[in-house]
Image (cartoon, rainbow, N blue to C red; front, side, top):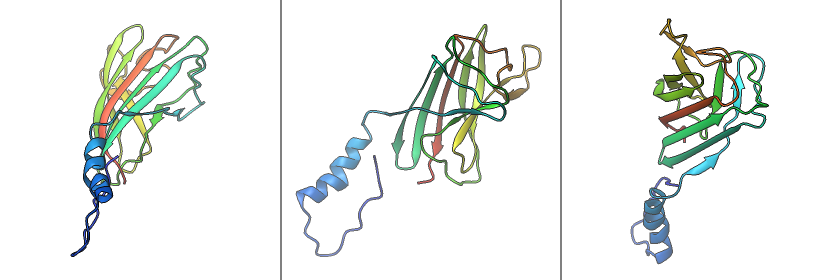
Length: 165
């Protein structure tokens, strides 16, 4: 993972170990494999539970830039709770005063395109979809919006944001 480069001192003897750490390792981290993580799925109401479904996340971090994907598939024992859903971020977002928008897709009975929002200093991300097929204003994904969630439903989120550190 990339980090802040070292400050060199006049007259310092540069060793192979320092060169490897400061140049090779940082360069290699830009081509490293993504890091897997398990996002926590929460809501503003009754808590959902993934049961025998699956929820996976992965990300890669370049300096303070984070690229992230979250994929969730509901199983036959998934309980959907109530309220607006959110998923934990792998790294806290910067306190930049800005919100970042990414893309989302919900696959249920129908396929719904939406967006995500990572707010300033956030630790979670929320997905927004049309309220219904006749009301195209956006609102949080919930157990009944944009359609009633059921076994086999899938949520896919992809976004880029600035990390706090």
